[in-house]
Length: 192
Image (cartoon, rainbow, N blue to C red; front, side):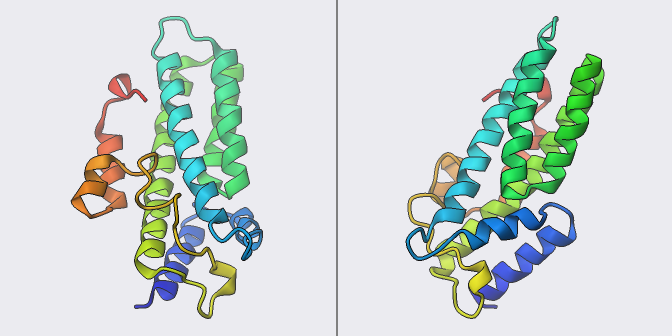
């Protein structure tokens, strides 16, 4: 299967499973020859920031006394970045998370944080696979201009902010393995 077909199938799956919404298509339309790595750079930044924010949320919710205003500020930030890349499941979970912040429910926040983590790492794994396709296939514009994202360049499958160093060094990028590794760590031990 060609890189363009793999990419099309992956993105179609991401829409079908509710991971992405139409905002992702809007993001793709912003890419042009003057910024051939635009989408991959935005996706990489989203993954990096999302992981950082989830780490901060875990730290805040691990304290005996929770500062719900700070938690809400981080959740609001994650919701905004999720909305900007079309991360539908993450965005919707953040909406629920903010409700628990307003209720000052630590238990509700902890449960919703787990759901955010699951949704985020599922999406990050798919984004990692997408960037791997770019790296392997080079320029995937052929016949699918709406999916044109150009070569990976500096923000892609070798980016240590997105992929653990041991995965890069092994020569293989397995989004599921990255997700499984991150998700298997208990929340109380998960730190950025």
